[in-house]
Length: 479
Image 1 (tube, rainbow, N blue to C red):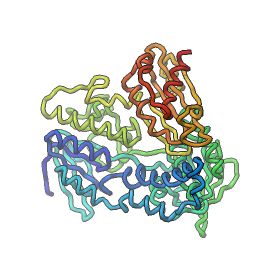
Image 2: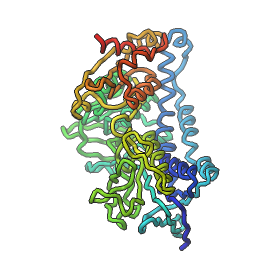
Image 3: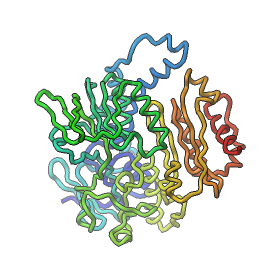
Image 4: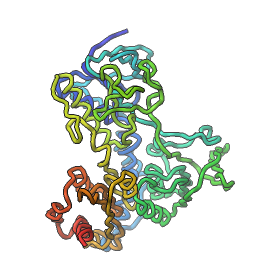
C-alpha cells in the first residue's frame, strides 16, 4: 500500500471540502482531498446550480409578463429543450474537469475513491481499480461528505424507483405527470420548476408547505402553486407505492385515495453520508450525524473532542445547517482554525470569533426560489418565542412600497421583522415576493451585526427601490 503524508486530509470534495482545503493551502499547509464521485459535489451537479437553472427561465418569463410593454413582446411559451440545455451547462454536463483543474492550481492533491478512516489521522482511499492508498495527516482529518436524500420506509417505495432530488435536477425530459412526496424547500422548488415546464404536478404535503418558515410564506407559495395548476394536497400522506409494468406510478394515500403519475419525487429530508467512511474504527456510529463543537471538532459520546481534537466535520454532515452557503461558512472557519492550531496561534473561538461558526445558531440566511421567492434570516416569530425572547413582530405589505409597484404591475409581497424587545435589535426577517432574494443580505447584516433599531433609522433606503420596506417597517415599529 502506498503511503503519503499531508498536513490535512479532507474526505469529500464538494463546495465545503474544496473551501476547507483551499483555506488550509492558503495558510501554508499541505492538503489532500478525497472524492468518490465528481469534484464539486452535490451543489454543482444535482442541487443548487442545476435546480436554479431549471427555475430561472420560467421566473424571467413570469416577470416579463407582469410589466406592460414587456408583456406584449412575449409571443410564446418556454422552450423546454433550451431550458434543459442551459441547466446542463450549469452542471458542467456532469463533468468535473474544471473543478479538478482548480484544485491543481490551488496546490491541493486529489485522490479519487472511497475514503475511510482506518485509525488516528489515517485515511485509506480505495480506487475504482481496488488499489488502496494510505494518507496520513500530521494535523487534522476533516469529514465533508455531505448528505443524501432520505427515502422513507413506505411500502413499495424503493421498488418503484422514485426520483430523489438528484434525478429531478438532472432529468433529461419533463414527465407529463409528476407526484411529489414532501412540502419542504426541495419539494416546493421542484413543483414550481416542473409546473413551469409544463408537467401536471401533485404535491403530497403531509406537514404543510414550507412548515419551518413564517406561516405567511407557505400560504403564499401554496396559493401561487395552485394558480399554476399544481394540486397541493395539504395533510396527504402516502401509504404505499407501486410502479406498473407500463411505468405508471400509483401512490395510495393513507385514506385510500390513489394518485397516478409518470414519475414520483421523494423530497422529505436528508441523511448523512457517513455509512462507509470508517467511523466504526474510531468509536463512532456509521450512518449517524456527527456532533461538533463551535470550531467544528467532532465530539465523541462523552462530549469531548475525538482523541486530541484531530477530527473535524463541516457542512451537512454535522447537521447544524443543511445549506451550501452555511457549509462554506463553516469551511472557512474550520480551515482557518486548523491552520491556527497547527502554527500554535491564538484560537478565536468565542461568540462571533474568527474560528467559531456562530452564525449557525441564529443568523442563517436562506432563499427558497419558488413563486413568490421566500427570503429569510434568523428566527421566525415562533422560534424566537420558543427561545424565550421577548419579541415584537412587525409586518408590512411589500406591494405597498413604491419600488414594488414599479417593479411589476400587481406586485404582491409581505415583509416581517422580529425584534428582540430587550436589546432592540432584529433577530429575524422574512420576505415573500418576486425577486426578494437580493434584498436579503441587508437583513443578514442587521441580524449578524445586532444593529440597534435607532441606528437603523440612519440607514436611508434609496428611492424608489423595494428596499424602502425597511423604512416602512421601522416607522411601523415606532408607532
